[in-house]
Length: 495
Image (cartoon, rainbow, N blue to C red; front, side):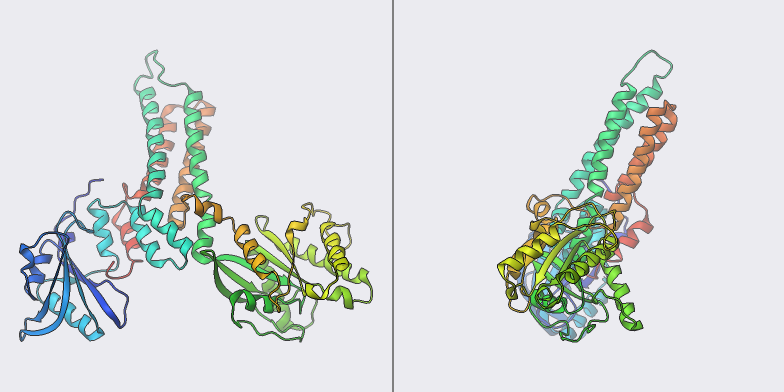
């Protein structure tokens, strides 16, 4: 990529690059055509204009107003074009006093710098051709990552993993476009560069790759926000106790009183580097209490949005229920409610809680009951077709920490992220990327339809140009100032 950076974009900027607050060290970054020269005016030590690139120097920062020493610090010099922004860059590692940070910024501005805008350093790196737009957004994702898995995906994107995939797609589209343009140029001659069948195969292959990449966005969203796990079941099944056990602290109130949980309660945890968002819900039952009923409605919404559903069953009620048929009735009815409200893409895990109170025979009885669901109306819907297997059932005790580690392992396996993360696969985490790929897919679908219908190459070429346009917005090879401003404004100042 070759970008022309005008003089205004190469003026000298400065900002604190470390997070706001007090710390042992704060880093102030200066970039621009005269960055080294400006820092030299407030620097006491080896003259920075005479040192080599990628070198580190100890010295002092002087206040030009009274020649007093503000701080002893370290200056790291990067000469253009071998720097992050492509311009001269100096990074000053000073002591972390807030007052000192403000004073150094003040004297830099007084010597000719201006305060950088949010994301301006990374924007300059993009405009200088140091990285494409997808890689630049990977920088922001690295900064925002809150789990090992999210960090790994962001680093892969920052290092060009996504860009490599997009380049491959772009090359295939260009090949298809070239063949179509040749067809148009020689349409009046008896020359065939590629049959319509061959063009359709090329377009279909590219469409499949585009859809496959776009399909990773669901996993990417889970990485950013946490895999949503809804804890559902009847009142007093142990949902809040299980939430506290998985979170390793008392997050939810636990009580023997039915209907204690009136609203959804969320807690974030991390298992094997994967973030999960646990959602404790109100117990599913009929109630005349309007507040509890509102909580139950929110339970259904949590069911619909969850990627994993943990259905907790109080196994001890099998022992205490006078008639086992009542227990069966309750289980069958709850299964129907869960099935009705859950997302088709969700995974259902069944945890039989308080299982330490059950005999082996009762374990087998509950397993048989659950693996023979769904049954027939009136308690279950005739539309239920996916059988429950013994592998979907885990006998636990949330209070006594029985088989909780097995449950954690099951959550990791059900997240669908372990395999993708172990192979360094490209995973979309950015809604802008997803929308652009969706638009690319629609244009490619139009190309394929046009080829099948025998439309003129002029019309097909137009749809193909639109596909290239949407794909180019991902890497920034085709962008507008408004798009760039929107993207980089989300960065922190100093990055």
